[in-house]
Length: 168
Image (tube, rainbow, N blue to C red):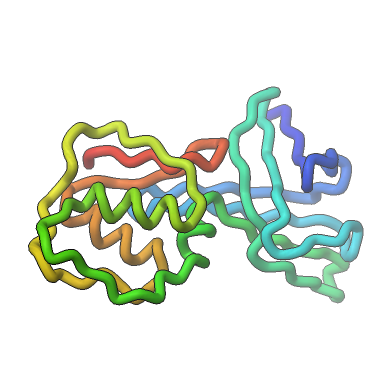
């Protein structure tokens, strides 16, 4: 397969020893494992890595972990798709409304607060949340996962890190 890899919009294809991507529909998380020669390039958390396959963007990932293996002479980079923004966004409030709300209302609120672009490919507003039901505290990913489950929905991220919410 013809592929290329960019790090913060700089082509690093010539440095790649190995890469693997994995997308899990059940969890909504896409992951990247990238191996390059030891210290061949400096990576920092939240740097952007883009994978192109056969000339098409197949995934955009945010660096989450960098590990140097001095014995093997390699650096391993672990990265995650847009779900990383949700996992890293902590919703500290214990918020509730005195009127009924919907799962969609809360999902949109959390996605917006975490700075994640999204698209619903499902109609309706999901299950009704009774008045005075608390939401939070917790990370946005866990809170959204609970709301998705209540409505029979899933979340996945496309190659541009837009969250796609649909019906299971």
